[in-house]
Length: 148
Image (cartoon, rainbow, N blue to C red; front, side, top):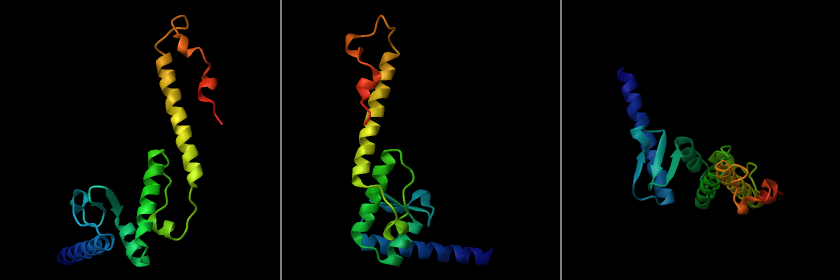
């Protein structure tokens, strides 16, 4: 058990040192902590960025350009907001993994908006019988959505 405690303390020191170096490199100066106090798991940086240990290691190991971290993070956030959870890890990003083009992302945003609009129209329509249907709802569903 004594060996485990020493190894755990060494691990915590190493993780904290890597996090400190990552923060220094990216000029994160405040509000940096390990989520739930679990050293070596997910770090919260400036109450905005959440990164795992593998991201920190990849960034330092490859000496990634500073702007690449922001580019990757924003890309993943944008896709996540669209419901796409298949985002690359940072190491794959740095190695040039396939990415969705800005045009495709814009198209996905348009489609998501159409789905949300259609859902709203559908939910509003559920409130009426055919005889009660308001005049503004006389267009067909497909005319309203106008899918590409």
